[in-house]
Length: 224
Length: 242
Image (tube, rainbow over all chains, first blue to last red; front, top):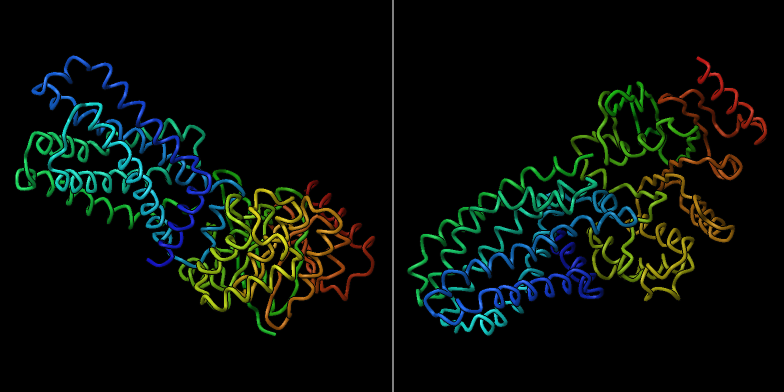
């Protein structure tokens, strides 16, 4: 676990220095939110209709911006053969996975932290149940990154990794997206944490199951 | 001296291509072994197997009595690898790179800081400690790469064509660092195409052709560089014709 934290710290230090992915992810997510707000301008002005599209728009933004970041998660290690250097360290391969998951989650949280307030303004949507929304976003993001990091490692040596990653990832994260969107819709229409317990349970189970599976198979994925 | 590396009947295939064909090799503790061979001889594949990056398709590899397949994590703790890739992060400084790898090898903070200073001094990069690796020249990166490979005081140093792309000064600095290593503590296995330079420092020479060891001789039994070159060419040509 300690080595995983070192890897995450290294990834985040590099990212904070260059802001290569963070800037792209934030700009991308803001663009998507702005485009949605323009496209659905009439609907946004009607308070009943907005709750039908807003949660979907929010999660589409997170998922696509997140895919951008995940595609670089392992690809960045190819420069100077760093992935080999990492594999030569005396740690279990699963530590590398944990490090990448932590770094991926932190990056996603940054993007979400910027996106949610802008979303609230552009969709004219007062966010009352902030705590509930945060719980859903955190659980949804963990599930998304847990699977995405595994697939990022799986596709890192393919020539078409930028295309292949979302193609493989999106079907696998549908069980995260559906409860996240449903729960977000309920929270945005005034529901509390009690009203979304079913979805939260689903997300927790998904996160735990996929984390364990990914942790166990990661050794084989990085094997030459 | 006992054998710190023992490869027995090692084979490795990539689809239909057999990179190693029942290779046997023993390296004694403290020895400086140089492996020569033409491209495609399986040298890099062998280094990858010895460093646990790759698994053999057949045979066994024992490193200091541990199985390279089942005890990979423990073996990695005692191995340092230097390749033509630097394994360094361009957006981190020289110092940060060494600190990261030191932590990955479990070095305590105070030991690590001392080791970083000592190694940066040794590879003549102390004045560039705070510079991003991306701004260093190829030679400087390779020198820093030596420091990275030595950060945890490895008992075995595996070097895969370390002189590739180095200028005279960088090659000399590199050679100096390599020769300064205490043979009682560090066993060195180096792949090289540079026969002259290899012969200057090694204890033993092995020539590999087509996935097999075809020549194995202590340095003391080898006459001049020219003689070794002739032997090398004869062996490579002989294997090609076979």
